[in-house]
Length: 309
Ligand SMILES: [Zn+2]
Figure: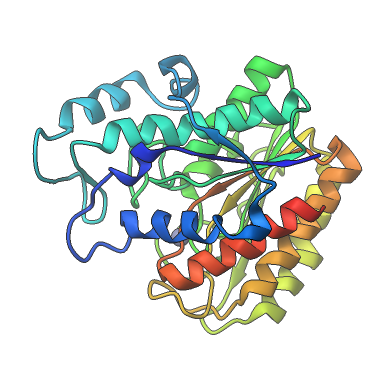
């Protein structure tokens, strides 16, 4: 069965201003890489808008209203130090969250085995009531709630190998016995959450902390010893990947030293657990990655692995 690729042109129209690391050039680089011949069998689909019902299963109506009201007619406005809005930002955010929901639908219908959402803005820092850290809506969180609401799933897992801790996603899992959140991240680093001792009320949170300078060896050891066994024991009915590639050694925003093969390895390991528990059902969504060339080659390694499993 095929791998689907969900994206939408509006995700290129979320402008962040000169010098901002989370810029449209990132997504252009990813889409160029996925145009290569080896990706000709991807099932390419347009991401729809998420509905307000889908978004408000995670976010407060007040956040949605405030975001929409803050969109400028021209230029750029700043929500906080790093999170900015341009005229196209709300539309981009709707399609980014909508991509993950549509990917869930396609995977659950058995039309494809797994899916990758090439979208921006990213999502894992967005809290229920607060956009932050380049993230407007928590795309993967919205997808996870959609999977439970629209498809009757109970146990859903999120694996987040972005170099930053996904504070917004952990918030969703902390008080929920049926939502697993496992993260590998550099420590200490923005946003400062994701301590080793965080387990959530029901033990569904697992954080693997990596010191600056850690290589793929430490990343794989942390995955193998803690995150993957916990994911396996959780026995998910669907797995999401918060696929950030800013742990790559070339990334300007962090200090880990992963390479393309490490991301391919992690993808294959997660896919093997999906095979064991849920017929391979896996939905991956782009989070960070701020060196465009490294990001593009990492996404190629990740999606290439999804196509082979
Ligand atoms: Zn990140």
